[in-house]
Figure 1: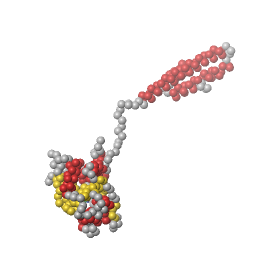
Figure 2: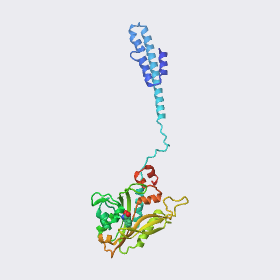
Figure 3: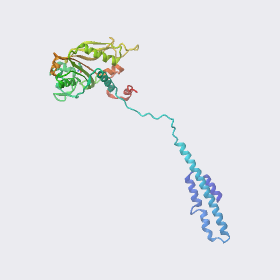
Figure 4: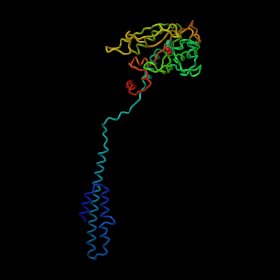
Length: 337
Ligand code: PHE
């Protein structure tokens, strides 16, 4: 019996099995308990002999179980430690981080550039009155140039602004000719266009306005030249071509040279070597007058550009819709470390 029990103890491979062995041999219904229970039936001489033997066997089995139990526990601990090992030298998993949208970065870059030249940044409502969006900018009702900016009307007199020029009209109107104004206004604008690679019904603009005594075309040219060089590289040239806007007179469009395009060519560069960037001009006397500035004392320049276009030219983005479909693979390319 002892041999058999010790054999079983040896064979047990888990704490559960060991416990089963303990119950089977040492438990209340086990053979040893039975022997001890049957002691009464034995003779006086037999009792101490059998009793001692039974106790000895019981002790040996119990000892074997205890030592086996310690072995199994040590083994399991060993196993657990091996399984839960952490290699502290492994590199961590990268935590994905966000970053500014390309358009946000470009707008901020342009803002910083003009702040550096003394312009303040102003914002205005995207839902605008017909007065500030058109009338105050020398575009009275029925003016054919209103068609240049096909609009989203909400009521007859309220619309989604088609450009950020109304912010300039509002600012001038607030100041009422009492001091010079030097500002830029970035923001979203809306036009009824069918979206394609170069058109979007919603896009952004940054317009600038400088009104003071003796502001001349050469001032405009100087500011725009600085802008172009800082944005696209010092080797860039600018040229101004005559154009038309109802709120400026004279009006110009500005091109920048694109010689920077390397040997492989540059898709956004026209054959002429120039590419159009923005519209500008000297503020129309009527616009000044309507805002409370005396055009005999004050003069000013204004310009307007589309940050999407600037970003497209600067980074070779081929479709304006990339800015709004927010494909993370596109946006990620422009995250600065
Ligand atoms: N507001 C004009 C536009 O949206 C841009 C512009 C601004 C042109 C200022 C000249 C001067 O097209």
